Length: 463
Image (cartoon, rainbow, N blue to C red; front, side, top):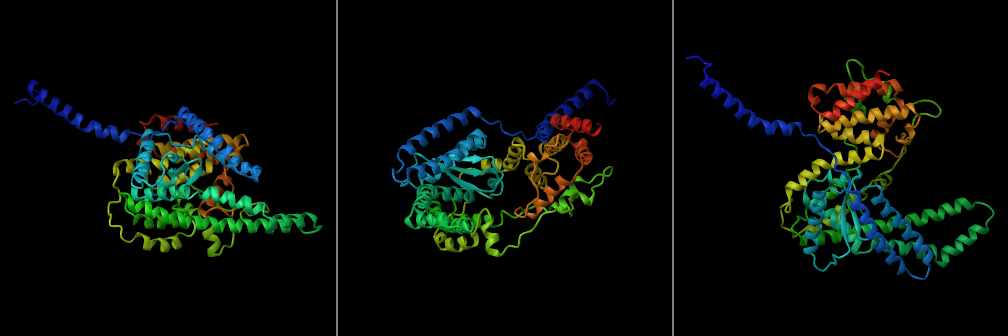
């Protein structure tokens, strides 16, 4: 029987079509590339206006005593709140905002003694692994922290911690304490004595300021312990597992440590057969004005410089309070949405640094994300775009506006990256960027943004 008879050809064609229909969704999914969420500027403007009205009402209620001092501090705090909206830091993805509302509502409904009328949470596009209460009933949960969270219960603990700061009025209490301290008779006498003194004014003023900062730091750490304690109480009443509060703190204790060894990562990422990586690109400058100092830090200082200090001690204090909570579900609300948002969080933070032209920070986040997603179309393309912009800035002698210099206060791995940015000549930037992109041609040839970025990189190399 002839294999090419009309009947057999029709059957084979039907089989091919069936296979194509089966494979098409998988192929399309494989070709999907991450796209950052477009910020809803209209929404942010409306929200900022609403909070502005609330702020104006607050200012009318300030104490008459030392009113100018209070006004100056609250003005400064409001300026920060306003910048969060003006600089488009709020993550306006509808699914993310709805999820934050659900998390907050779940916690507040389990704690009906709390007034839920004036508190609102937002995800922030910041890459800093932190959360914060910023005033006016607003707390922010940074995408840089969401990227590191392991489950919903850890997220809920952090939210409960920020709620505690709000309900215990830690910010307002700190402001009042500061104003009362500065205007106390003892402080005023000391300031008058310093003003009358002929010598050592700066040293005495510095000592006085250090004393205020020390007391402020001590009160701040007391506030953290109080917020932790209240957070566990709120969490135990909710569907979330209170024990995950301790694992969240343990995670926060090491979250400031870099996960990327730049001395290894940079050569591995940017070495190319046609343009080998040169060790001198990450070598410290040795001239009079080059290099960067290192700080000798004792354990107390190292802990004080963390984004989240005292975590080990905070865990010890909280452990007894967790006893009695038998809930074991770490994701009792919506594990799927948590996983989806967490998967996007790191790349959304990359997009925010790129939008703000923070090239060194953007490079750092890209290299961190690429450890887990080595051929991600968005990350690879974004890396190429940073190099192209880096070249343009270096050529116009404006690079220092967008990059960070090595500093003794930076993480050593961040300093290695900053040194790399400083060390490359203009022709190196063009070549390294091009050869990095070229390695992905076979994998990303169907990704239009990649092709456009590679085309621009090629043009720069050929200049």
